[in-house]
Image 1 (spheres, one colour):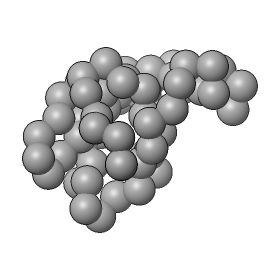
Image 2: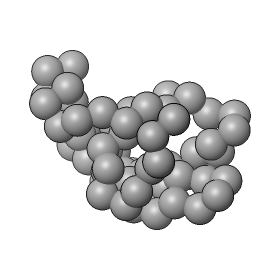
Image 3: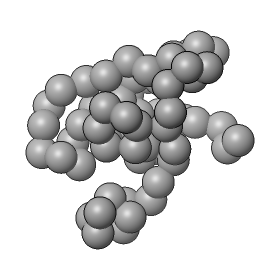
Length: 60
């Protein structure tokens, strides 16, 4: 799987947005693609997520 980095756009079970922080176990991302300022912490081993490009976010 591609390495996640701060600033990547991700889609998870909780929302779509930019990665704000990342550790070995967690990804914290906002929900900016859905027009929300909510932030989510997802566990890499248990939660589904994928890196997407901004064009995919705009058309979904």
